[in-house]
Length: 381
Image (cartoon, rainbow, N blue to C red):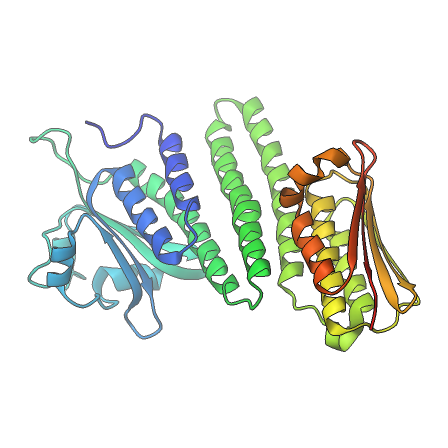
């Protein structure tokens, strides 16, 4: 039985989809290692994430039983060929690792390994891990095996995406430290689904274009146009995510200036024209200002990501002792009767909860093809 699908690109795509399903760093590492071992038909695979003290912060293996792993003992140090890969950021493909002059031996319980393929996992200029395989399986008992140039190419592609998956997982874990659970979950979802999926698609499309350049330039041109479109979308998504990572400076700048700053960034980051107008708003209780800010962010998110709007207007105005916030877009809109169904998808439930939680009121007006207006009024204090 062959351990490689008929199409190398399809095999890599399958591996990438598997990696993208996980957000925990440990799960991502395990999936990368298992995918690499299966993709290249190796007996053993491992991935080490170095620490700053000559060892490994994490080290994941596939092909070694739990009992064997316990018998092997402590995690390896950064020495021999592993150290060379991390230090020089260079691929190592060896017919017999034991004969390499840099080889320094294994613990007594370590399985015997011969042919070896290893390469660094890099995020820009930083080496964030070392991915390596050993003992390529032979389809026939008498066959002569060993990792090939094609194996090296496939593992290189996998390592590039492994860097994205690992970086994305780390971003997710950092997002869990945010104090507000709802904002934490939304940010993780944005980073994972919107940004990383587009980057995965972008890289695969670029690789497909590279393979087509010589034999089918017309198709290659189409793939490159798709690369440009995906890159633009990914940049928009990433800029918007960065805006949400910034802490709201409500205490220092007040609600109107905080909104003005964020809307200016969104206007630059998106093709839609986003405007802000503020009239006579006095300081409000802190809880009301935070609720107004979060509702504005949610409504802007809907308008810019889901409605296809070309213009979005945000206004904040004084109303009696309180204030009223309005976010109006000229996007696709929806049937008023569908609010109950669309509400959860568009965050309307959480917006209403935020409004009622500070004694306010939220109204939504929309119609197919007529855009949407979200209005929130708070009583002041």
